Length: 92
Image (cartoon, rainbow, N blue to C red):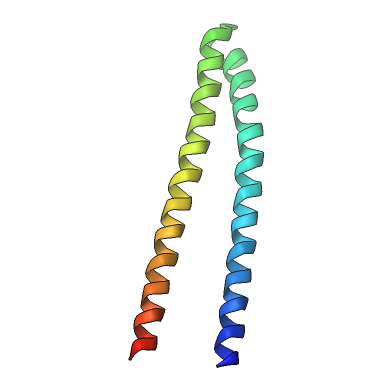
């Protein structure tokens, strides 16, 4: 029984490491992508119009946030399905 617990703990630790990596990647993206899109669109797309460049940066930030939320929901759903599968296996 302790072997199953150890394996479960290793899987949980590996999953939490993936979560931390994903959080770091999205945090960096949330800082870098809007700034890059603002200055790039200010110079190359909108020809100096700061309002449209700011809107572009806001859209980029929202895309990063929505992507993070969707990925976390999908990860949560897959982990709950996997947990239910493990519980039904134990009942047999």
